[in-house]
Image (tube, rainbow, N blue to C red; front, top):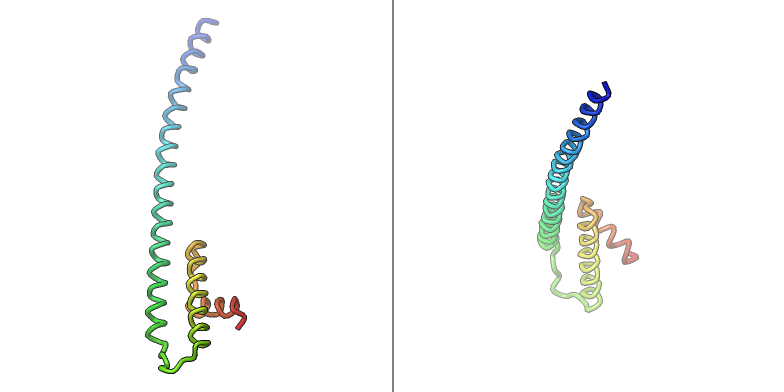
Length: 114
């Protein structure tokens, strides 16, 4: 009776490590696949944000009518505003937020104290 229990117990011990090893390999494989998928998602988001920013710049250039007579102060203010908008898009691209152009304009105006 004891010998049957001993044989059964030793066989069970031999089976357990094989199952543990095989589950560890599959978990590692799925972890690697999910890491690659999340990296791909981050790269896609970064590309989307950059194309959104380029489209914003094109819309802004098409919408703004440049007056031939601008003072140096107006040019400096416009350059500062453009720099602030670029900074806002840079921050938003890192966080992954999607916002409208009006929101970015309002954020830039708030930062500049306008």
